[in-house]
Amino acid sequence: MRFFLSISLFFIGFFLQAQDSSYNFNLLDKSLVENANAVVRLDEMAIEIISQRKMVIKQKRVVTVLNKSGNRFTNAYARYDDGTKIDHIQAEVYDKNGNRLDKIKEKDFKDVSAISGGTLYSDSRVLYFEYTPTEYPYTMEFTVETSTQNTGFVPSWYFLDGFMVSTEESKYRINFSSPDLKPEIKEKNFGSLQITKSESENSIEYHGLSILALRSESLAPSFKDIAPHVTPRMTNFHYEGYDGHITNWEEVGLWANSNLLKGREVLLESTKAKVRSLVSGVTDDLEKAKIIYKYVQDNTRYISVQVGIGGIQPIEAIEVDRVKYGDCKGLSNYTMALLGAVGVKAYYTHVEAGKDKIDFEEDFPDLAQGNHVILAIPYQGQYYWIDCTSQVHPFGFVGDFTDDRKVLIIKPDGGEIVSTPSYTNEQNQQLTEGTYTLHESGSITGSVTIHTKGIQYDNHFGLKEQPQDNVEKYYKNYWDNINNLNIKAYKFQNDSDTVAFTEQVAVDATNYASKSGTRLLFAANAFNKNKYVPNRYRNRKLPFEIQRGFLDEDKFTIEIPEGYIIEAIPEAVSIENKFGTYAIDFEEADGKILLKRKFFIKQGHYPNTEYTAYRDFMKAVTKFDGSKIVIKSIL
Image (cartoon, rainbow, N blue to C red; front, side, top):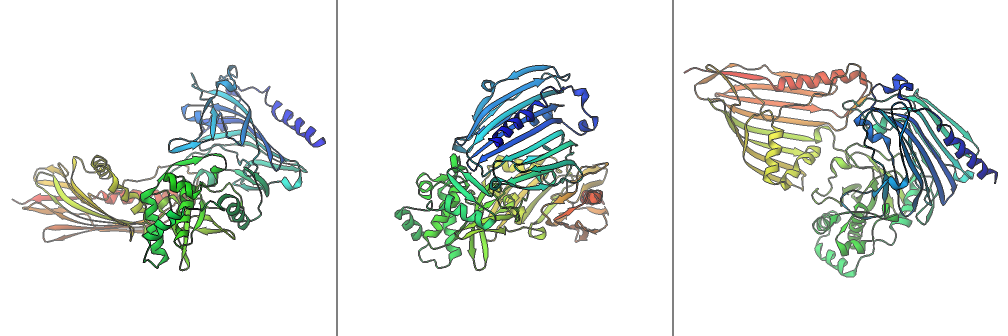
């Protein structure tokens, strides 16, 4: 009784404090406004874990929006579904002087699906209010209370909302009714910030003050990697009808296998017979797996499904087989069932997918990590990986969506953290070979062949499925250093066995060379000129990273007009440093010019103090890639 009385008093005190405060913009500390599109005046969340099967969350946010780019930080929304109820929601808007302009009640919020296009059905919805300001700055106060039976996912807390937003005050508190419901919490990136922690017998609280905005900078690590935040996890929890107890990744895997996967691999006997006929006479398990993967690619399509426990549980394999569609969970489970029918073992695997490489944390087992599912197929001491949502990727190639990160493999005897394949440095190769003829008019005609592997393959092979208009637009953008470019013909070859893509392109262009009297001036490197130089910063704050290295090699033959000789040709250049290497060389042979180029960038993490050196390297590459040749007529 004393516990619940203290909780009631806690909630009353928790929210009364800010109710009489002024939201006058002029009261803001100027340091919080610098580099900011919005300032979070107050952000507080109170989480009440009443039992293993009940959790209440109350949140209040007060955000002063400084400009149009800051509108998205009001975060005036709340998600709900069959397992989560919105008990209260409200917003108020104030002008720059702190005068209230509007009060928004629950009926004024829009109620829409929380999942965008590509989702067939979902019970996940969101109430949101989108305010259209008449002037800046303005302040929005937003309060919401939700309750849920699911305690497997306790909200994380970020003391900053994103780049270009600062925080004046931030509070995060978790109350728990018994010691066995006390969450473990991982703290990250606090550094020297004003963030304090206090604990009592039944609560944990964090309090942050005056956290300045981080300016977004080129090549900065992902916001999640550098932002101050805390992540809680429950040892004892409940999720959609299933209780759980986890202390390590092995137990996470056991819980997931028993409650999410078991019994969902059943297929019709007719389906089993069909796929067994597909691999008839094939004895090698890897070859069988390739055949089944191709069958899934040809006969299913991806559609998201987010209903109830379906948010983390796959649709039954027999249902995917019937309707021929599914989400990443359903298609992975279905493919795993098909592989099992032909005697090939495969493991359902959770991964944090996306361009940024985000690892599962080996020392912090919980259900919240991961946003995608792929399959791991063990074969001769290693894993082969397939993404069953892709209808185009070759077998065993995951690309930059799930490469080089720690993931959770779910096995019948428990979970295991392993790493997906990495495509590093020289593995991401592009070889460009070509010949072009420079005409006396300044126009050029030529042909180029581009071979790509690794992540560079991932960036190119999709061209094969594009219509002609899109292909031509792509090359005109890719070679935007060539004015008046015309794509005469192209041909693609996608070798999925070796994971290599080849492009053969015939081009011409008018006025490529500049004419001055009897002379022609032109840039020798027409078909792979570096265009990227990262932004300049007078006072770089953040470290930087090169997530994926690459190797470009180029060989071009340039034919000059008859009756012309070379008057000026660039000297060879060679640069080598900790970031990579660059070399370009020009030779004259039989009236032709041979250009050889090599550009290599290493994957790596670097402190902010080395950013200028890296930028200077890229500037040098751009400069030498633009080196010009002068030829003159002798007739």
